[in-house]
Amino acid sequence: MLTGKLIHPDIISALAFCGHGDKILIADGNYPLDSKTSDAQLVYLGLTPGSPTVTEVLDALLSCANFEKAEVMQPEDGSTPEIFAEFEQRFDGLVLERLGRYEFYDACCVPAVRLAISTGEKRTYANLLLTVGVA
Image (tube, rainbow, N blue to C red; front, side, top):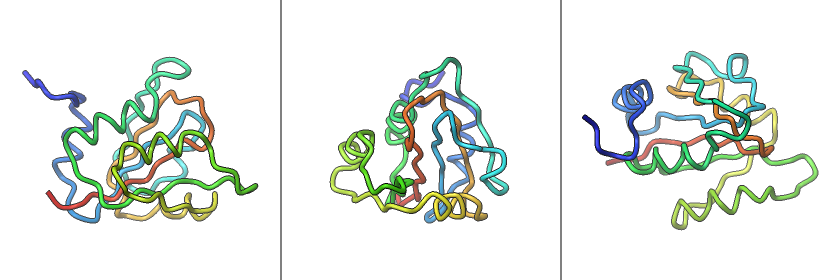
């Protein structure tokens, strides 16, 4: 029986196949996961509106993998969504790379995106594209 923070079998399996430079998308409940990813393994976790959150999924991933880059979808009006601060707190100095909406969609449609996770997150702009680092 697994005793770590991450116990979802499909996510653990997908992570095991990832290498340095591969990418993982954690998406809010509004993200068009099926049409805005390439050949990534899709995992739909949304159970109820708001559950699980993107940050809950991020915490589970951070408990078992290293990430060297984090990209977010920048609102067109230039504002900074509150969730960006929550992301930055978890990365210990890693600066979020901000991409425009369509630039973010394009970045999520490349073959390097190996896993895409849909959450029940209700906050907008709560999408996070992670690049796997070295062990």
